[in-house]
Length: 367
Image (cartoon, rainbow, N blue to C red; front, side):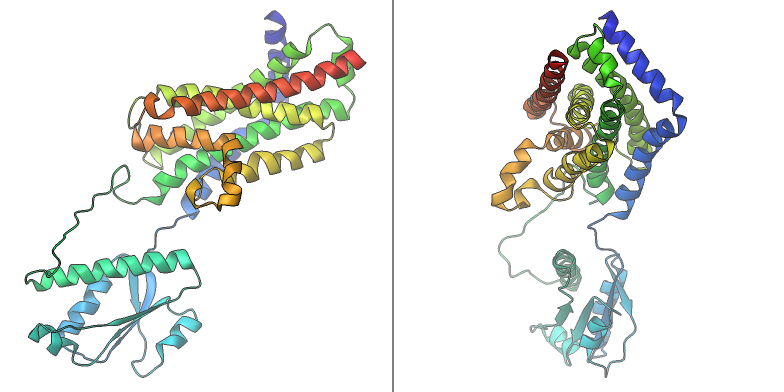
């Protein structure tokens, strides 16, 4: 144990000597969390829309005002005699609302009053969301008209966990995990591969310290840095993103400790296997960034991944921590919902450490 503590202390001292790297290691994750959590959003707001009102009645005016009052749409001026498709083709608008003649007369007589809405489908997700929001505006307008609904079934829909549909509360935990995945892993990989590249690892082989204690010392040192990053990003989640614990925080705390060990062990495994800092960075980018970014459910549910690739997400350690973090801040399921995810993270960490230990132990015995 004393050797592990000494190795950890040595690694921390080496990291503290490079103040620029230390500062970037702590500040960059918070910057990444802030930028990506703010810039990326699937919520449609102020979508430009043109209106062609061929009726000009008070009913059609109120109908257009209903779209103006929505935060989703922003009505932009457009000549009534111009083809609305030109507005879509020139990107002046993303949708066009066309109100036919006799709209107001049909409303007054209780007859059907169809309208047409053209939506730019280049971005399928935005088009689908805009279509849904437009339907909500139409339903709200119909409700204001009064009368007895002809629909026998009325659905009362309530949104749980994120009733305001705030994208930051969904993406914030995801990018929190992404930053905690990338930077400690990169530090561990570079620190370990540097010793192999500069041949200073030979001093370790010639010393009496076992591979297990050497690796644990490096991993614990990176965990200290990861804990500092965790504190800074947690402050952002609570203040800027407005998140609070929804239930028992102990699965999140335990999972965070195990995940810090997991990513540090992964970086150490990469650095021990690849004695080149450039190659180690590429391996971390592929394994520590791309897999978590694409296959962990960070941007979209895992169920949306094609079946042929979905099975790969079971081997992405970031997936389980993202689900733990989102449960802690949004759903509040606690241990019954997350215990096996915590166990999975510990399994990944033990596997990475075991591979690194086996590789370094074999090199020590060989030398």
